[in-house]
Length: 328
Image (cartoon, rainbow, N blue to C red):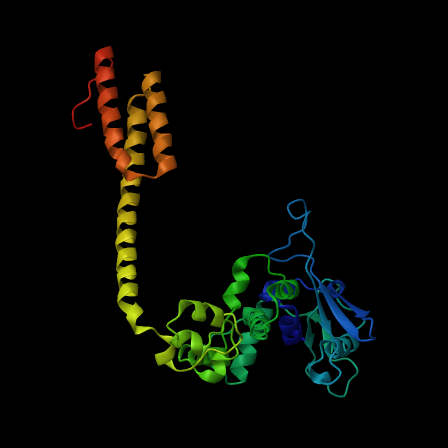
C-alpha cells in the first residue's frame, strides 16, 4: 500500500505518509465508468492551510483503475486494503501494522498504526530485502514518479498536478533515460535515422550550392538534414568563426574588467557620501553622479567622478569644514 500510494501520488518522506488518514482518500467514478482513487492533501510541505495558504488550493491527485493489471491497480489495492482493516481503528492514521498470521483470516491488520520511525525507512527496508544496492529513501518514490512522467514526455503542468510541486524543484527530477542519452549521441554524430526525426531541416542542395538565393530557398523545403559532415560543414567559414569567437572572448574579458571598475566606483561613492554628510550641496551633487553611473554602467565615468571628488574636496576646504588629502 505504501509503495502504491508513494508512486501514484508522489508523496514525500515518512512524515507525509504518517499524516495520511482515511479522509484523504475517496473513490469516484469517471464518465466512462472507471473507478478513480482521489488523494486530497490536508497538510504538506507546500500546503499548511491557515491564513498563509488561504489563496492556495490543496493538492488533489487521481489514480485511475487499471483493469488489465489488477496487481498494480491502485483502486483494487486500496479496496482490498480497506477490506482487510479492522472496523475499530484509529481515525487519524492510514497505515496499520500487519498481523503475524493473517493469510487465512478476514482481517490482516491490527488496530495499531505503524510508527513514524518505521514509516521513514520503508523504502530502504524493501530495497535492502530485495538485495538492491544504493541509497534509497521514501523520497525516492516521489523522484521516480516525476522521472517516469518526464521520460514519457508528459507536460510539466500535468506532472505538477500529480505530484503537487509548486517550485522549480520539479526540474531536478528531469533525468534523461539511457535511450534519450543514446538518441542525443546519435544526433550529435549526425546519424541519419536520428536526424530525420528532429526539428530544422536543410537540403543537400542548400549546403552545396554556391548561390545564397538557392540556399535560402532550399531551407524552406522539408528535405531531411543530410548525414554527410562534408556537405553540412563549410570549411571556409571556420577561420572567420574562430575570429568571431576570439573577438567575443576579448569583449567578455573587457566587460568583466568594467564590472570590477563599476563595483569599485560604487564603493568610492558610498565612502564619499559618508564622509561629507554635513554638506547638503555636496551630498546632492554626489548622488547625482552616482545615479548617472548606475544608469550608464560605463566605467569610463571614473574620470568624471575623480574630477567631481577634486572639485568637492576643494569646496569643502574653502568652507573650512574638513581637509581632504590628495589621495582621498
